[in-house]
Length: 140
Image (tube, rainbow, N blue to C red; front, side, top):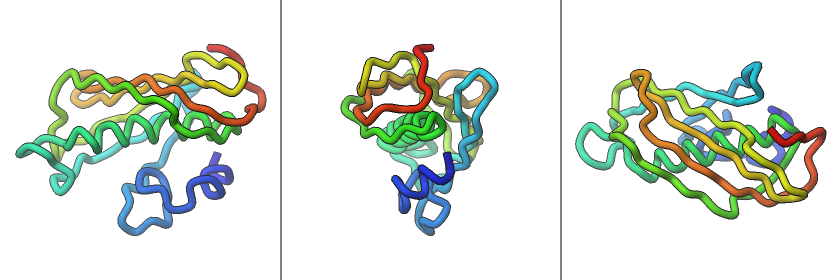
């Protein structure tokens, strides 16, 4: 995953360790095939007072899904992203972003992701990604 991310996303604002202005999230693969990272929700990324900006939430969800594909040896781009904001995400408190493969069809991959804070799902997303064939990729 790290090698593909390095090659495909060398300066990504979400996941690149070399982007000094980026978030530098470290995604970890879980035994169920999903991927997750922890995020501290710093106040300089707020929209409304003490609430993480919705664009940042969307970026976190999208970045998690992209890295989930990297973990499967797949490089793909976001073709569609649908985000549902369920509850405000507080700044200054840790959150977890998680993603998993929902479905694959040839070069189209459907993934889902969620952002959890204080044991509550704050936002969810479904993303459709287009890319080359992945190895080995099973419908899950």
